[in-house]
Length: 327
Image (cartoon, rainbow, N blue to C red; front, side):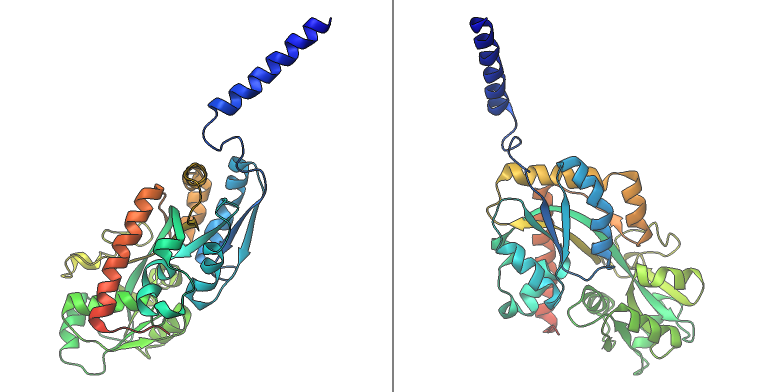
């Protein structure tokens, strides 16, 4: 009897040791408690809605509760600053927009408590949101060619955007650069006020994000002249890219992705990446994200890191060339 019990105990012990030895690195230990995701914008914003669409899928895959905390302010510096200072154990990660990772370091580095390149590790890109150049129905502008011609003849021409230092601001500057014009830019505190003014005809042009503009375009209340993505987008399939309207190489999209504190073990980064990529490929999640005018963009950690560097180089050069300043 004793020998039989002893053999059973040895078998169980051997099985447990085998699982520990041959399981993927860290898989037996992570995660074993809830994971907190910091979102750097208030509830209801695009990044918040996307992460909440993924929340149940992530919880199911990682077998732990996913806690979402909104920490808005300072262009994302507050929330991502907290992530950068967190323990590198995979239990606090953040959703970072393009601004905090690639624009803020060039516009106002002194205001940042962390260095995105040194203090964070990329997990995956989440989604991209293209912009669209629109004209008021009260203007006589119906094409990019007409805008360029008018820019050389009309001092009253202007382009509204969602605020200095925002991606829409940079997209407007890029338009001027690529078109070889100097149309004055009008900064608003967010997309909605800019949309209201171009709708009313107070300004002739604006660069808006697609969530704020697509219904107005479909209803014929705004004229869409071109999208900022490199190719046509599913939300506005009849609107050509600006790159096909004489602005060669034009490409600008808003985006956000997931980051963790620097020093997070590679096996945890891989585990988180796998969970997010799987969730972003779920048909129901894709539909929820596309309703926002965003496109899911899952990537590897390595590809996201390369993307961040490329975007930082691109926008850093533009910011320097035009002497841009943030809010």
